[in-house]
Image (cartoon, rainbow, N blue to C red; front, side, top):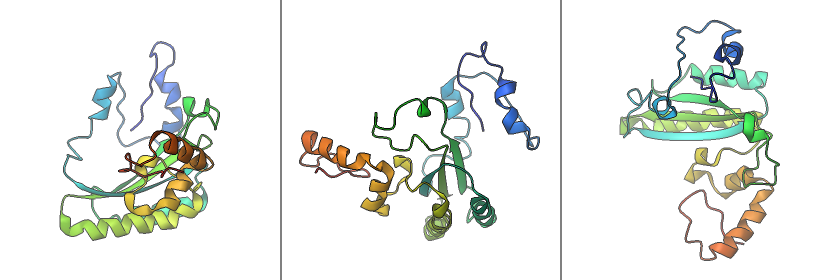
Length: 194
């Protein structure tokens, strides 16, 4: 699935998607202008609300040969038909902001990956968690060390939160001390006050 946002009159979609089509023709191809909310709901029927999920993520500055081997190994051993791995390109405006201007510390990333074990059956909870965690452990050495914060699980610990914010972590702790010294806003991948 690919999305090209912008004025359709100014940039031809075919040119933008050439990089997708060049390696090999896709098995199915559909491109059309549509409202963004329509794009966001296209797969709701395949992955309905109420499923159990276990995920892990990382940022990448490249896709190394060793990482491709890991993707192949775990892609061949998916525990359920709904389990998946997504790579989201990090490009465009994300690279137009100076690294210190926002809390997000990975403006040098070019990919954001998320591994998701998904299934409706509670009996498969351990299976999907083990697959996602093992896949992530095998892939993590090829990563930049941190992840998109929404792809960091509550069970991953404070070191993982620190890695996600890099050098911004200390500054964010100071901001938290100033605006939330009692850590009222703590039900997330928490940054405790300094």
